[in-house]
Length: 279
Image (cartoon, rainbow, N blue to C red; front, side):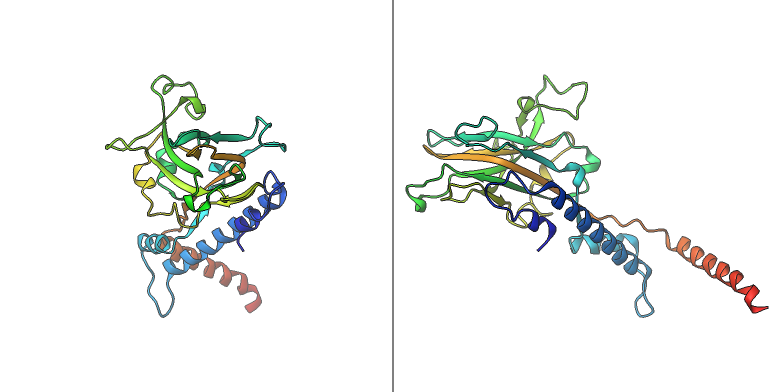
């Protein structure tokens, strides 16, 4: 099991994965993967006696095809509520539908994203400690308690804020496609019949490199998470949430000519160190 999977294996009664263990596991795994990816890139770029070296651009292309990516810890968004009964604890986020219309409530979101950051992103995953209303009269009628990811922009009245990296939920407006449809996508549904809070995650690969969210996102956009419910009595209640992004691993390799000079220098230095012993 990956470190992320181990962190999300905790069940109801917890407001989230234990901070110390999860932070250690994620950092250790990220460092290991970065080392492995760099060694792989260096091997491809350097070549072997039986295989010629590859151009750096081709190395990058191969690593993208292999989905070599790392978690962007600096972009991770978390929300944790205190313990208590969801019905009476105002710090639990929840939304309830009263009609057949979808009710959506923006919960957590990123700061406005720079183009440099966007160009490197390739995956996003949401994990929530959540549940629905706790009972369903007709399970065959569908699951109407879920979470969505959406692309937001700041309203025109707040777009020139002194600090553009700090935006409030009330200042965000959901973006739309040219046909008027909203730029939102379902992340995952709550367990249909469960009275306890449980960790539920975006299915693996849902928001991968080929998802359309990456073709719509633009500089200054905010990625937001919404609680959603539809039809009378349906609720979506969230206790904790973690939104994690991944970016492509970009190998940093010296030009091949520089590598050759470094090898020659090492050989010269090695030879000089051995001269006194040879006399």
